[in-house]
Length: 281
Image (cartoon, rainbow, N blue to C red):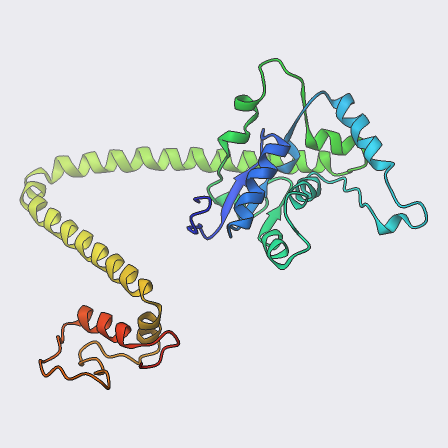
């Protein structure tokens, strides 16, 4: 994920544990506006600077701000940690425009780590971590604890579910570690039994791996080349271009030399002959 470069991963899962609320929200708002899809988990463990009593008093003052004649018109006071983070990010995005609404639609927030995100690699933002941004000894409180004090009723449920998830993850890790030990042991036994034969086939294995590497690099190069020329890529996708034939000659061309029939120059020449809307000039 690179901010402002237009290069976005398909989806980024962020572990919000021990991140500062405002700093995390500002980073996520910028990433969402840049087109990144973001999933935030463990929102109940987000940190706020200042003690619990201070933060609770601030939130109770916020609860008193409402419309006198019809409170349902707003402002809406969310109690769940995930919705508090969502509302904080919304305040940093022009959410009433199409661009802002589309950015906010790319965000998902959860308490705990629900499936399938428990099996996906999770990221952190160092610029928003408590240990790097808050002075040692400074008071702080967890967003989940604050939410439970002001009306959120699922704090204990989430803690219980998280404990079960961590127990399952620990059991899976121990099993994987045992399998790794057995695999290493089996490989050593195989090397002892087949030592001479392995020395004979080692050059063949090296050649095979080199061939696989070259094929993969060639495929990536061709994919990048085709995507760099949208009209040619579209023509290849829909079968309108045959790479083993000469590309169409422009109407005003007087060059009598034969065209280059190799695939890549033919592809590039075909693209150059197309107009902006995909028509011949």
